[in-house]
Image (cartoon, rainbow, N blue to C red; front, top):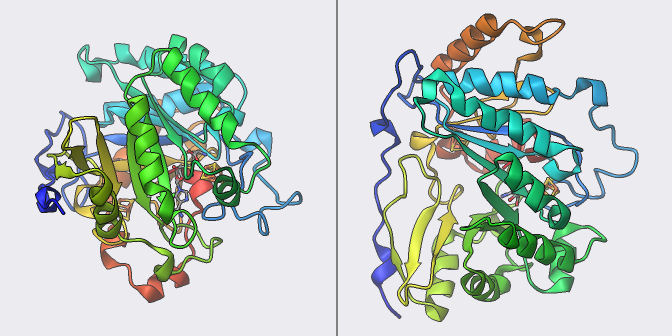
Length: 363
Ligand code: SAM
Ligand code: SF4
Ligand code: SF4
């Protein structure tokens, strides 16, 4: 076996420049990345996120009136950009079940004119399960979306269905990925959550598919997010094990992070046919460099994926928006942030704390 992959690259989020007027948190981490959830609904029932037994036909999702409008989301994004955010990722639930999503993309793209950016365009990305992407990829690109991540856990129809809990076929996701490529998206990322005994044998096939399509595969350790998925440590396949399995098929070497604060450990195929990312949030936490904020579809701000409570932003938006008060509240919340859940996780905290569900705040 080739040993090239073993070196770990340092992460350096604390070395990021601090923009004028922008806060750092209590661990000196600036704000850079924002996840904007546009819905808590989804047309899949992934066992690791929204198990069908719990999220059945009677489950009470957010009423429409509780969802932030696109204008409200864009206002929140504008203030977060003023405080340092440079990547805006649209997520959910499944973001493509929200109608006219391209209108939100256009509003976010218009933020490029913000004074805080000095002409540097925002990175506007989408995470989707891909099943509705075939028709939407082109309009989203035209509206100003510049990056897409598609979640794809298996290329075996049976395993895909077992993971997605949906009647929608694997083919719908593959068509979505093809449409995104045809619409001009390059460097599409494919996210696969790996669960021991379910799809861990699928990693080489996913890698082959990604290499052939020019996509970047990102292999994600199964996380103890939320309180519904019955997470167990023995179902987590550590990134080191996934890497060794893949390295045996396609030799790899470690790469430096593409930017400070990057969550994936990057590796390049030695034959230079692309790269992969491993997200080792359980076995090798990266809280020290976490520059992310998350806004739920009903306007709660979460400063950690594992938080129990958010801060209500809607009170600064309704009945009339108060942008100055919103910015002050965001500044104060980020300045007080001390989250480092993954670094202090143990078997007890993993199953004890009430935690926000992943489908409310995106991945
Ligand atoms: N519905 C969209 C999708 O699936 O891409 C966006 C929202 S989904 C919550 C965002 C990401 O979170 C997906 O890539 C999904 O695989 C990941 N995810 C959900 N639950 C997870 C878990 N328990 N552990 C690791 N990743 C998870
Ligand atoms: Fe839906 Fe995404 Fe959660 Fe799967 S991971 S249930 S596609 S929100
Ligand atoms: Fe960031 Fe919280 Fe994840 Fe740590 S556990 S990396 S603070 S979201």
